[in-house]
Length: 296
Length: 304
Image (cartoon, each protein chain N blue to C red):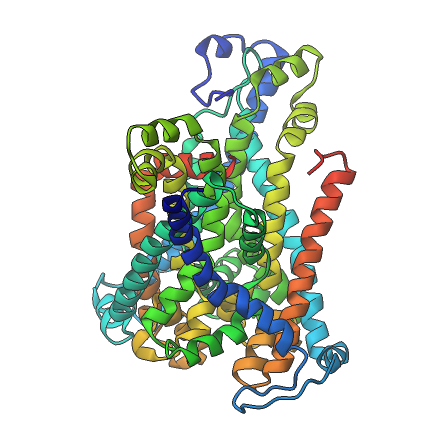
């Protein structure tokens, strides 16, 4: 790390009489002001949503700026039960967990194999995987609809999991490939000389060494799959199987006056809080591994 | 290769690749084929109609409007997001003292943590939050504006006016991504060897010159990557539109190709035509990436 972000050296502050130091102070002050403004733009909507989630729909309309008359849990209960946010959340957790585990297994295996055992045509395989990253999902959505319908997977959670895995697969391979390429071959060869087969060398020797990459791509995949919208909207139209993003989209598609706004805000808070909380508690490692992984 | 190794490669690479082929590659190929047919999806038969779907798209004013909207998004969203993210990242990393070693701004981790918040929120929820913020009568934006005496905004429909719907939509997308790219740029800038900054300083370069002479050239590969990802996103934009203006906005001013495609396929059942739209979208995406690579190269970037 070349540049320190630590508190400025106090010795520098003492030289404040010089013109250089005063221009320093200007830059520092302006930077703080701009960054504070941006932080407010980021936080304000979230705070407002949180406060609104405790208000009745009447209160929301009569005064967008006021605090709730009384802090009641009503909106949350109704969002969880009446708007089925509870069930959608469960569906989301099931689909995202299964897809994440599967794509991490398939993606790391494929990236390792591709990086370690080149064969005639492995370059083509790599480029075909890259192609999946380049083309928009929208190009595939119509044929995909019929692939799922013909296999009986349309409107089922397993069908959704299969498509999640398939579309997260290319990025996972693309991301992990350089990690496995960068690992020293000698270690794998030493393990094999000691009698470890391909599987043990992969799972117990090489995979743990690619850990920083694995963690980063797992986080990316989690956020990407949790965020997924087009695939469920097009391929999972049975209300029973809705995932959270579909449940939230229903609020957007309802006509103005039919919406229970208190419920809407409560549902937004329920959706945001779990992931945001995990982020805040682990932000140091998280941002570290994301940027480390991406700049590889 | 020994047999055990062949089996290993077949299982670890062959199996996932076969699965990927069925669910990703094969549909991509099929889309090109369907785009040449008049298939309505629910019949078993269809005829090849050559390029007539594409010809129809060229005369379809609504689709052309959508293409223009997407191009506008692809022009503005990456540019503004990257400039804003770079500016904020520069302030965090070199906003400190200019004497001694180059320093970051003190107590700046708060900004870094907060700016990243939107990246943890699903896009559909970001859209919902801002459609409420901009709500004509119950939104915070109008309440605040009338609160400071700007009464003309009392029930101004930000997302319902042709002149503001698109800019507001762009703002929402940019809001969602600045923090992520800011964090990425901070990491990239911290990876620049300190000697480069020291050398520039010895040559008498001030902060702004250092930004243009040292920082920008050193992070240009990261900028290129960011540009491509944001461009692909702006050419899609489906999820934001679903939350902000699901029906295309006033006079289709925020309609995107992806919305048109989705409706053409799943509401009207014209799968041949919708596939042609998908092909156009794919070609524009590739073209966008090619332009970004070309610009980076022509402006002196590393040969890719």
